[in-house]
Structures are given as C-alpha cells and as structure tokens.
View 1 (cartoon, helix red, strand yellow):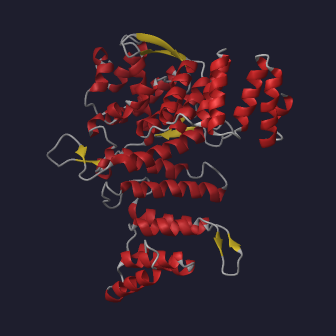
View 2 (cartoon, helix red, strand yellow):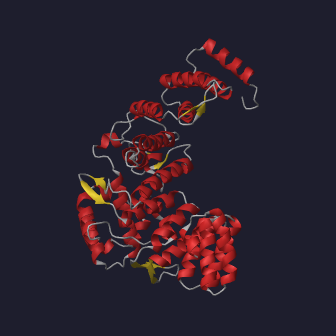
View 3 (cartoon, one colour):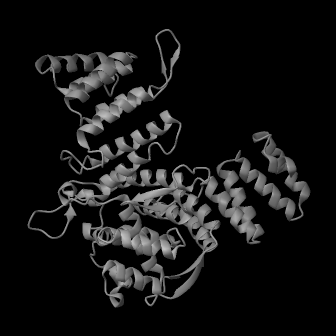
Length: 461
C-alpha cells in the first residue's frame, strides 16, 4: 500500500480474510485500498465491520471518521456534504462500549492507548457542537476527555471520582501558594480548609510529593466557598510568570511521578504511583492540552453566555477571566506553544490586577498584567520568532508603552514573516503616521487596502 501497489495489497488482504474472515487488521487495510481507489462506500462498510468486531481498533475508527467528516465527490461529479450525524452515531457507539456516562471506564484500556479514546471524546464534542450549531453542546464530552486523563486507575472503585473542577481548584491553590507571601491571610484560610497546619503551608509544599488532587477533592466544596469569597464571586486572579506556569504539573501531579494520573500504575502493596510501562506521555499531553484550550476559548469568548459556569459537585464556578487563565495555564504547562503564549499575552494585557512573585534571585517583585503580557510574548517568540501574531501583538504593546522604534521593528518583522498581514500593515502605518512620517505611512495604508479594502482602521488612516 505504501508504494501504491493497491492491487497486490488488496490481494494480500483478501488472502488473509479467506483464512480468517474476522481479521480486523486486514479488513481495515482493505478499506484503505478501497478509499484510495475512490470506492468510499466499500471502504466505509469494511471499516464499520472492523469496528463492530473490535470497537477499540483505533485506526479503523479514525479512518472512518475522516471519511464521514469530509466533503466527498460522488461518481456523478456532484459533492456530498460531511455526514456529521453518522459520525456522531459512530462515536456514541464506540464511547458507550468503553465509558459510563460520567466518564469512568467500563473496561481496561492500556495507558499507551488512552489518548486515542480521549481524542474521540474531543472529536465527539466538536461534532456535537457543529450539529447543534451551539459551541457549548460539546462541553460535556470535553470535560469527560479531561477527566479521563486526570483520574488515576481504579477511580471506579474509589466511589468518589475526581472531577475537572477539583483540578481547577488545585491549580488555583498552587498558583496562590506560588505568589502569596507565607503570612497571607488567604493562605491561612486555605490551609485551614484543607486541614493543613498554616505554618507548614508555604512554597516548600510545592516541592514535596503531596497529592494535591486528593487533598483538594476532600474539601472542594468548602475550598470553593473560600476562593469565591476572595474573588468577589469568582475565582481569584492568579498571575504567574511563564516559568511558574510551566512548573504546575510538577506540583499538581507530584504524587503521580509528575505525570498525568491516568498514565500511572501501582501494585496493591505500593503507596506511590509510578509511570506505566512503555508509556510516552507526549501524545497524552498534546491531546489534553488541546482539550483544555478548547474549553478555555469557550469561557474566554465574551459573546458566549449560555453556560456561565463550570459545575463543581453541586456548586458552580462562575465563568470569569480568572477561570479562563487557569485553563490556559494547564494547557500551556502540558504543551508549550507559541500560539498559546500569544493568547495568554492578549488576556494578560487586558488585566488590571497586580500581584507579587519571586524572581530568579528569590526576591519578591510586583507583577502586573502588562508585565506578564510582555513576558508571555517574549517566551512565545523564543519558540517561534517568526510568529506574525505574536510579533504584531508585542509590537502593539511596545507602541502603547511609547517604545516607538522597537514597535516599528517588531511590526516590520511581522510583515517579513507575513507580508499580507493586514493588522500589522495597519498598525505599522498608524505608528509611522503618529511619529510624523506621514508620507511614509501612506505606502503601508495602500498595501493594507489591497489586502483588506473594508478595514475601517485603514480607511480612516
């Protein structure tokens, strides 16, 4: 198949199926041959049969979903719209085999393959949102996708499984413990709620193998009340430097060898969790980060008001910028990406809060939203120094701070990376005009008009 000899590939698959008609690998491979030859209906039938025989044959599921969710051309030359309803029915069937409605596993799945099931939940949420034309319709699937990775093995037997809200609250506590001085009244309240001696509730706790998830889970309702009171009805805003944000998993999952709990194992006689054999957490971190970003963007969008909270054991965590930031911290810490740093920089630039944090020398310093925005933009550019959106947003921050020459240089870099980037063209034209070089700015306005003829800022400029 890989060298394009579909006839021989089909011949080999059929020989295997003559020996064993239920051999799903050959069935799925034959489906790929049919797909490559344009026989989509035959491919669909083969993949569906393979999935019915083995619901956990991930490659067949992915192939069939891809087929159902793309626009297809029929033999007559017409186009067929994506069959999202059929795709969702397939996902509902597969997920019902493996998961209860509350997201707990019905059957054992090796940690090596758990991210494949997690990805199906994420896909289900996205398709459900598309079908219902409602971005919130898939939230339940997205939450289950996260809880699948945050819950350690044996959660069914525990009786009180971990919830996503427990992870959010634990991350908030870790962030507050990172930034607040040891004598903070808020830290004392949190310590009392968690049943921890206040004198021991310091940053040193973040370096120990403490099971923060269980600690928070056991008092989540009372802890939520304390945090909502501190935040005036929402979670308090936690301001973390990029370095502190990247250290979140080290503390949050310290009882799980700093890995996602679902990727760990332990024998009945062991107290400590250890990484399961042969598990590479790269895929699990990537999918988990993607789902976290999906939810973060839901809560970030000011136009979305249908769901204004995250459920937490009968209570509600109201939607707020502080809740959105926690989702971003978790996503970033699991998979740092330039685009995530960019989004976080945008959020921080709009925040008026200030806080204190320990710098690299161990001294406490004041940090503001603008301070953090610049740090996150710089960190993102260290990953991708040609990211046009990062360069443009950082340039705008520099412009607003009166650092005109630096801003012009950043806008120029953004245009070097993406010459037709209308926002960078418009902003550069504006800053050049404001600096007095009016004739020079006109060239950039004209370039911007060619790209975006109806861009109001360009027309006005």
